[in-house]
Structures are given as structure tokens and as C-alpha cells.
Figure 1: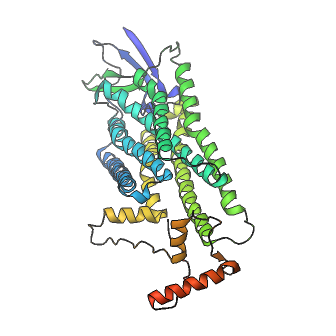
Figure 2: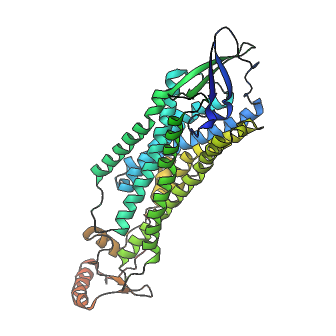
Figure 3: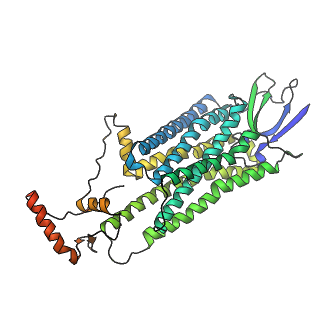
Length: 421
């Protein structure tokens, strides 16, 4: 008889979703049943209903919301910007994790039984690591793009091809980091004395020592945690802090043009939205990582009462991050808000907000010069009124008479209004 001791909670493996139930010895034998009489990790039906409602709602909102975000960007030419392309990449990752991972892992955690076979045991964990890599690296790419555009505006911006190349590199790096999941995850069948059978999906890294500890697995998990949480959070904190100083802390010399003021407001809105996305990501995933750090040093915690439901709550919070991003886009970005309104226009209570109309000065600026360009002729004084340079007043007067002659009215300068990006 060969014994296998699976003390999986001695390593902070965030993707083995049953670490909290692997704190005892299994026997790999066909003729002697396990010491336990039956599966001790099946929750009462009413608790299962509560968790099912929570997870089902999260999966529906995450999948549906992220698919709508992808449609809004790809179906509307005006939405095809560098930042929005990265948001599409983020939405693809979030939709994948909610459909291909969370659903199956929840069923596994609820009954502590994996009914989906060895192959999907590998695929499910591979998708989990791949999507978290894609999500966090995409958030880093967005922060770097915003940093380059705002702090170093004279440097060339990323184009469509470059953005697509960065997205492909992100998925390739994520696939490389996820490869151990395909190689080392497997299943084990446990037979109980009462005839029940329980299949476990777990990681079996090579070179496990006599105390059932595996330094390779521990090292992989620590490196993975640093690369996908602490390093990205630190990097994004630095970039957005610099961006905040640039947009809110610095004072420009002289008077700003209408286009420059609108450009600053537009950049501030985008940066605020991305900061909220990053903060939500950090809050959702922090308890998850802290839990596995604690249990790696204090494995006896996994034997405490209600630890299964504590872990279900922590897991739900981490996975729910995938459903918050579409809500944030709809809340903080008027164009995404109009896109969601168009998608749900079949609902009688949904009203599509009107597109803001550009004033004359905004239309001229957007057609003939870059937003915020020094060539913009109309400037704002400190009290917000429009001021025209003296050397343009004579030429403008002739243009006014020309317009009045052909339109039958005097040409009046229009006050610029803020258009929402």
C-alpha cells in the first residue's frame, strides 16, 4: 500500500481551490477504503442555495457585462481608441474566467468533488492563471500608456498594430506562467467507507520531500504572487501618482485654450476611471492572497469551524472583480453609458442619452487641429470668457460680414460647452 500525504495548504497556491480541505492523509489503494465514513464538506441545502444565488448572479453580470463592453468598442468606430482596445482585452479575460473557471470551481468547492475529469482539471486551472495574468498585465499596460501620453506627451503614442502586439505578448506571457497548471495538476479518487466516491483536483509538483513539502511549488507560488499582485500594484501606484501630479498638481503658465481645458478634463475622467478599476482590483484580491499566506504558516486554521464558507466568501470576492469593471465603465464614462443604453434600448424604461453637440469653436478645433493645440485661436480668460487675439480681429470681422451676407444674420461667437468623452 502506497500512502500519499497531501498537505496542500502548506504552500500559498491560490488556484488549488480546496486547500482548506486537504489537511489530512489519503490512501492510494483500491481494496482498503479511506478512514473517513463519508464526505464531510457538503453544505446544508439552504446554504448551498445562498451561495448558488451569489455565484450565479456574479457569473451572469460578469459574462454579460464584459461581452457588452466588447461589443460597444468593436461595433462603434468612435470607441476604437488605444485605452478602449486594452479594455476589450481586459473584458475578454474577465469573461473567460467567469465562464470557464468560476462556474466549475464553484461546483467543486460546494461539494468538494470534481466531476469534470482530469483534462478539464488541468484546463480549468490553466485558464484561471492565464486570465489573472492577462487582467493584471493589461491594467499595467493601460497605466503605462496613460503615463506616456500625459507625462511625456511629445513621444509618439501606440497605434493599433502596436496595441494588438502588446495584447498578444500579454497573453503569451500569461500562457507561459500558466504552463505548470497543465503539467502538474491531476485528479485523485478517494473512496469512503460508506461507498461514496470523491474526486479531487489538486497540484502535484515533482520533488516532494518526506514531510510532503515541495520547495519548487512554494517558490512558483511566491513568484507568481509577486508578479501578478505586489509588483503590478506598486507599478500602477507609481504611474498614477505621477499622472495625478501632472493633471491636478501642476499649474500651466498663461491662459489655456478651450481645447486644452477640455483635453485636461477628458484625461482626468479617464484616469479617475482607471484608478477606480485598479483600487477595486487590489481590494478584491488582497484577502485572497493574504489567506494563502496565513494558511501556509498556520495550517491549523483550515480545521476551524465554517472555514469552508469563509473561503467561499474570499473566493467570491476575488472572482467578483470581473463583474465590477463594466459597472465602473457605465458609471464613469458617458460614451460607455450611451453604449449600454443602446444595447438595452429594447427595454421601455431605458432612454438613450443624447450626444453632446459640438460648438463652433470645438468643431473647428477637432477638425483642423489637435485638441489642446497652441494653434487654437480662441482663448479663455481667467473669468471664463472668450478672448480673441488682436491680430485676428480684423480678419475675423471680414469673415463675420461674409457669413452674415450669406446667412442673413449676424455671426455671433458661441460659448463653448463641455463635451463628454
